[in-house]
Length: 70
Image (tube, rainbow, N blue to C red):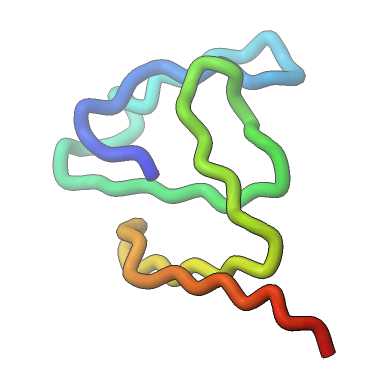
């Protein structure tokens, strides 16, 4: 989850840097769900196997880990 103050982020696999401060407002909250970290200069929080997270307007609302197998 990203929130104000936003900073720059550099992609892992490309020589590209994005300044999120230019693309957002102080009221914004941004969450990105991916299978691997996209950038190398930000903190990423991996999901646990079987974990589900619910987001509303970019904010985490709930999380649950259910490792039961059928």
